[in-house]
Image (cartoon, rainbow, N blue to C red; front, top):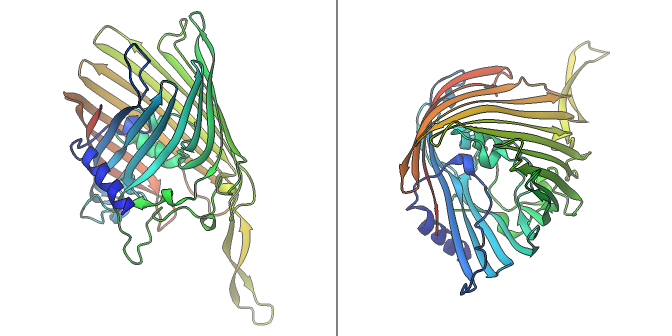
Length: 422
């Protein structure tokens, strides 16, 4: 009954807001208004950030990827301010939870709508601001690692970053300290978090139902120790340290993000995973109506996956018969994963045009795979009342699951966006 009530509340809020920009996913939660004379507490704020995305793959090396897919991708962020410096924050997120479904999935030549669409609790934490320059948080968090998953322009650029490196449902504590705020040098923050993967009953998905024997679910039930993975060790010895800066007078329009993360191995791992992120944004404003944004980010994981134990097939020659004998042996998979994004967006009044390139490169000790590349261009326009629309094209070079080589795909992309709050 609790889950049904939560789902009903979520749908009541989100359905009127048909869609939202995937490029602003997991953005900061609603700000608590600055105290003023006559302000009363508690105060409740909601921000809706929702996209309805369509991916129509007209041709692909793998026929299962052709066809059309429509899905929702976004969140509803809620903040309950109990005093001027203490609040409870929460985020309900929605996305498809099947393998690859959030970037088009496998329509197999047909049309799929909202397949494996699910709702889940992404964040729920208490926030305390003891000073203007310090914010403390405790509960279920998103680790402050990378920034592209919430601010990349385009249609699928932020969604893909979200899928590759977002570290959500992290149970722990975090702090952000503005260590420098000076009109001569700008504003610079340092953030830190210690956490472990949340395994409580809050981590399950809502709405979607798992059909028998479906193999493409990436998540469905609550997190468990048995699923393994970096950071899933039940101990608060996983951490992130990040540095952000903007409002630099001698670099107007420039901002940066640097982060390092260390995650202990889960039940299937043998080594710590180390993550590194570096991102920059530069916006040049030509006049009141026109601006050009350049954005770039690189994320790398060493010992990706925690260097898990795997079994590989082996073959040998029987000394007596001379016949080939198949077998298997256990080894560890050493992998270095690098995800790179480069892009540009130009805005002119309500119109915008975006071009981006993304690459996922995995250097593996066993079963090597080629690099994957995505090229996306799109044009969009603000409609009004919080809505906007985008139309684009994507050319992909992906890993072919069947042959192990690279396949190609051509897709038409569309997005209807809604953003707003109350």
